[in-house]
Length: 233
Image 1 (cartoon, rainbow, N blue to C red):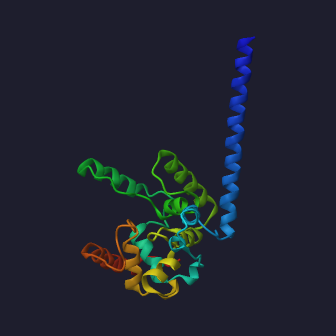
Image 2: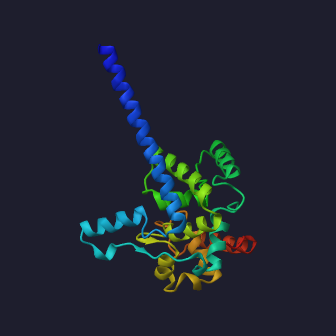
Image 3: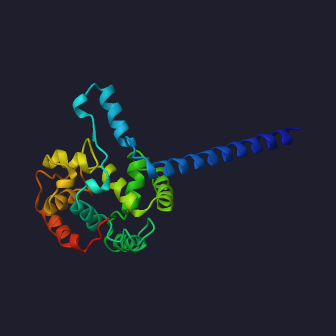
């Protein structure tokens, strides 16, 4: 009797887990397909920062977020982010295995770990997930990257990236960043401004657009050299 009871409990547990995973899978599919056509009113990080500012009663720290169509974002910025963040954006399916190999070689030779996230991976992260460092979050990022590459085209992925990427404390997306750093709309950026804004993306909370050091200026010049070679989406 006890063995039969244990079997029933185990069977119920496995069925419950399967139903939960199936429900979660269906939810994420609907979520990604929905956002193929509808612009997100906020991102998880924006919602978190907004709630935090309300709880702490700090209205001045509420995040800035303004979604813009890709056509309303400077072509210079579109080319700059591809040049700086993911030059093989159009040729890979979400994961740049050449860059991953380079990262592994660099780790073996120099004992230094650097990122290999593509624009697709960063988009999956900023649109669907909260900022954190954990195995679960990385697994979720990979999963969402596969989904957006399946259901969205590159044009939509880049549009989402430009509107949801973290561009500094309380600043999400190109429009908010342009307003903060240059007091202008995202469509009006010059090539130099676009390159400088993009140069801080690896570490937007440490580096400053308004006070760029020698390293940032070097990055800016390199990005400007690469920009004319990049596709315009």
